Image 1 (cartoon, rainbow, N blue to C red):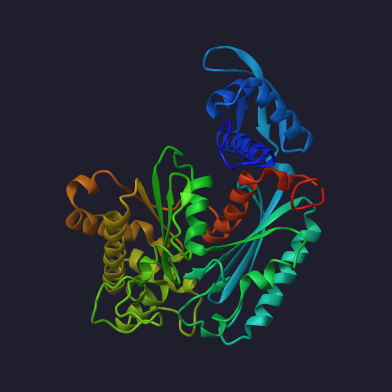
Image 2 (cartoon, one colour):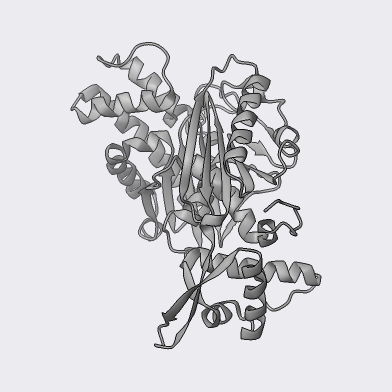
Length: 408
């Protein structure tokens, strides 16, 4: 942490600030001596860094604390509630906007539904308006995060393919959002964003080497955190497990492949399967994915055998996805999130059964499989986590004198 070849002085200052911010974000309260020990920097260097960060309004002293060695020292904490993040979730048929602090606490959120037949520019204008409204209400926003469906081509700012959303393929999210606001905007694939949310705010130990977030919603995808960093691939489209074939002679997917996993365990696949089984008592007409999933899960919990059969079939395919993730990435933990995960208590027995049957025992015993316990929509949370992660990497964003030139 002390130095790095090829880094100029300003880069090193920012890197060292980032190390301090990350420690305080994870541990809440810490002494200068503990921070020095964890970063490998001298106490003199930490004292100087902390002084500058207190001046920037990033860090505050909290009084006397007693360490593990029973020594008393002045505690430090992150001024999380003084700085806000706006998170934006863009999905099929809905978008959501929320305001968070950098510890992950949510202040407010809105959700707006739209039709896939609507002009994309009309939907984008509505998203921008809501973000502007939030910026007027919350004056200390330092950054904005946007989570979009994938495969998302990071350098191009474009979604390569999203089922049932062909009109959106030409939309460049970078061009649409980067210059719209006087705040930095960071855009991420929804599954990657969910992985960041779990890593930063999910309460999982930071000592984990590999975390896999398995998004099972309107689409199916995966975000992988490896040693604290997203695993992205060349174009940012790595880990698209939703477009791995589970039936090579299955129906053709809009991505061009056949028998993609997404076609067998997504929210739309669950609803389609329920209709094929002619489940009685389900709502009629077109439903949002969360409403459709909840209707099937409620029927299953009420003991409807057809609903239970549908849920078990969907769970089997989610289990196949977990098997693929374990064999490909050997993660410490797989966290299943998004709307289909609302049926967690119904899904998990079958998922675990499939994994136990199909994974090498030595691998099976080393991985945890859990349903996300984030209280906020994991993708919206992930959008905020995307922006928060950048703030942790670039603490100068907190300051009016920082590289982004943000207002106080």
